[in-house]
Length: 117
Length: 417
Image 1: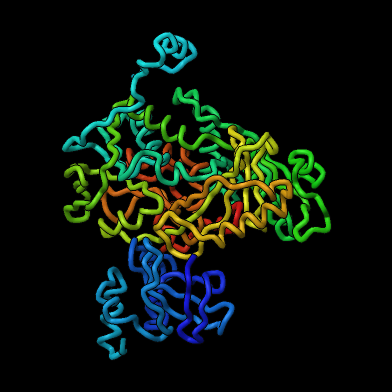
Image 2 (image 1 turned 135 degrees about the vertical axis):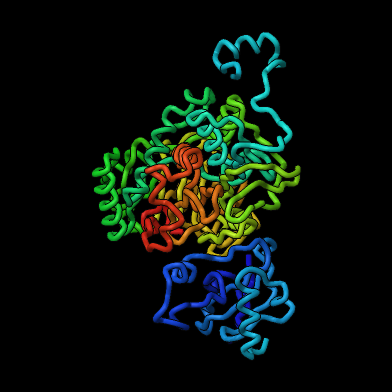
């Protein structure tokens, strides 16, 4: 059983008190350049998922608490949570360094744009 | 070819205290090069190899497997076979699979114990009743043998069901597919393995793929823990682990891996001689020949590679089934386990070519892979041999996600996962 902790209201509970929302940090192409979205970009946004065996960045919702969405980093093999962080935040720096796939690029861009970890 | 299994071979071997049975398949070392390599020796992979060898005369092929054959989801499912999906494309492939199951034991000379004992899908809300009625109409138009049945008929087919009309989810009727049923999951893997091996296919177990070699946009071989294998055709059939293999080739997939659990009770006398699925309350049940009740439910909602599910999902399933079948409330459960299923956005499989030449994929069967093994292998073998999708596989290509041409079975699945 997973024990989840909401970084917004501090509520802690098992997975039935929360809602798993899938992969985090997926860019929505329409938010950036609504006039020029290719079918491939829209496919990537809607369906393509980075599905690693290991460190996974994901979204959760505090269903029975404050109702807010937040982020978590979790290992999909051991099911161990590595961090909980806010919806507008980036994960701790050491986790960003372990990130692979599209997340590595995403974190690089966000850090370059001045977002604090 | 191998000596045939028959009542005479049984008698002959009995004379010898069963000491001289031939091995069902060899354990060869990998050759340096094959015409095609299938990754994953589960039911789908072995069926693909079998049909490649039998229907397309491709016998210089190998199946590589990280663990042991049939040790993944093929040995972890609840063995239900049915074909009552909503969309025409789905009906075509699942019905092909179900009809191939009918003669599979004869075809493979291996008893896969296909038992068309009937599948009853309960309607426990008005909405569900209407949805299944729609599915029944769609299925009958496609030529499937099925019908809606009344609560009285449900009670006759499944006497242990709770027919109290005042309970939380009363039985309002059911969808009934009399030709659906169950099979013996391990035997399907073993039968296809023995059949493929007899046709010359090398089945290489304990051989994990650790890299895919490419020359430009074309695959040229595989790196494995037992050396490099050159090949120009690779079929990836690794279910929940498809993303990790495809990452090696740089092919991104619309797949999320989640855990689906099942459990069996202690063996009891026969109480249920069909398959009952209860969609609204999330549970399905049948009884094995050993007398164990085989129970399955919904997936956990988060990504998971651990092959270990959560207790809330189990509790949810058991609660539902105790309400539906009060007789089982004091049964003890013997074993529970999890399998990693490959979920697509539209809950339909992906069969066909990829963006990389020579790399083929068959995955995304999610929670419904066992029932489709013969059909899936049949069309995927044809796809690999001819380097173009088989007509039945064509709607299930990877391109459907970019084209927005989804085959939505998320509401037509037996249990909403």
